[in-house]
Length: 94
Length: 497
Ligand code: SF4
Ligand code: SF4
Image (tube, rainbow over all chains, first blue to last red; front, side, top):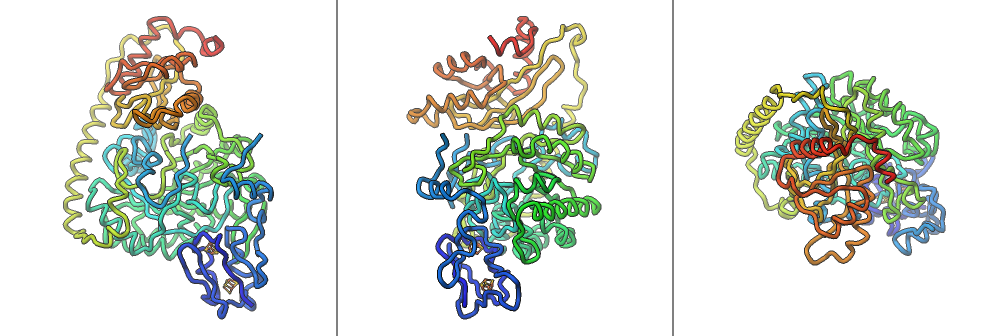
């Protein structure tokens, strides 16, 4: 069992020092988790530390690819507006 | 409107830089500070309008991680508390940051202040931030250090901060009420957990207040930044101002929310409105009381380097620094000479200002109303910028007795160059909107077309005072209008006309 970092990671370094197993390594721009070291923090913390601090929705996923912080869960922005922003780079208000 | 600056290279960012004139406070705004604090800040480029023309500051981006989320921030970019939204700085290692600082300080002896403000929260990156401070305190004792924080990790960092050559700490405090806090901060990371809403905001507020008290009780200067968010914390900031002042903060800097949909922030996307310039001025006025308000802060980008209007960032990119050999011991001798010369010049200027002036029968003058005058200036305290090239206007309130600086209104330059005036039409409309409340505009030159539109909008353009010192020009303009009887009626009647 291990978590994974996706391409939306912004390389902010927040997760890296928190990992109890030193499983996270810096990369530019995307950080990576060593699947052989990651324990999903079991035995160390209640919640996986990287996913607890990561500010970017969908940057950290579990083994089947489900994001620990799904779209909208951290910012509270409604999904249709996230979608509009991601495709057009802005949101047009009427 | 400020264009979003999304880039890893510094050059095109100069417009957002604090390196243009006036990131500091007008000299009179420092007047009522206690002596020991005033002497500390009067030569500081970010606090003293005067010093800004002589000394420079730089930031290094060594602190990428953050431990809270703000609704005006998008973590794809730098922290919006300290940098303008939509800016990305290249993250450096402490090693690189120290080398860059020494290289800049040797090349630009006027550089006296080094700040760490991001791109995340410096105290959420304690090893990187303190390693940088530790080494600079040792290797460059003539550089003052400053740091900005959201406050969450502040109490646990105070001991370490006190060990270094720290000039002051800036805390961003947007509220003291957890209910309001929950509308600004969706979550914080605290004791190994993400904590949402009111509960998270409550912890953040407690830590900020505790950190503020701990710092001031140790005699470390604290400046408080607040972001004015209409309908969320605008009224409440008056209370915040009283509280932080009572706890010993020496300066309160109320900044306007920047919320554009393109930045992808919660507020930007949800259409949270930004304050108008007049709303900001009114709030700064009512917060001020006898507390120093900072009106010049330009929310500058985190990695600008240089003095007045220049951004020399491209001379100090990481690969160029790698190749530089810096002999700091020699540089420090040179720097001391330059600083000494500047300090004596500033002292002479202050002495001249303090000299009593002859006040011509002020008492006999009929009461005339105060007006706002906008100035196009490149710096140096003179009217030396074309209307079409101005990226901002300095706004002063002038009345029969004197004047005070209200702040600057940022804009996109009407005419970016002689040939690129294509979009001039709408840009002019925006500039006029940003000049709300202003009745006279002084520039070194104003084109025919904007002239007519400004007049139509009730703003009298005036190019007669080109190259004159701002203070003399606004006095002359005011006295002329007053003598012509144009300032007798209340402003409201004029606006309605
Ligand atoms: S889940 Fe825990 S162990 Fe795995 S990478 Fe994240 S912090 Fe490290
Ligand atoms: S906290 Fe998230 S965004 Fe930041 S480096 Fe780690 S995975 Fe990437």
